[in-house]
Image 1 (cartoon, one colour):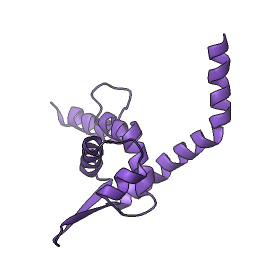
Image 2 (cartoon, helix red, strand yellow):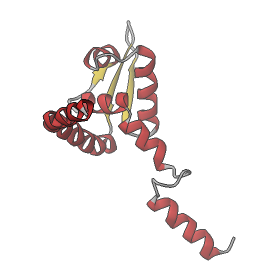
Image 3 (tube, helix red, strand yellow):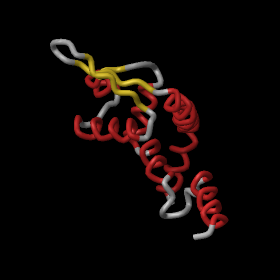
Length: 130
């Protein structure tokens, strides 16, 4: 590979191409926009939470799914996990600065959906009536 080819490849990966099957942004997009990732980001946008608090706040999420979601978001750099060495031990989860940036977009999308819900539901009802 020539220096020019290597630079073109670096430029490509830095910009990303979410439509490409092998783009590294795809898993990040999935972590942020799947049901549980979005809801966890919305919950954490209000401030730090313990695991049990998050589980109560995000209705319907299982312990296993919440744990996996938090691990994914932590690996992506959006969530900071802080384990406190106390008895009994507890762990806090909060958004990192990058997570705060991402949360603004996720919260905006969730807010838009809630605001447009009457139109969305009307469209679904009209389609079901056909």
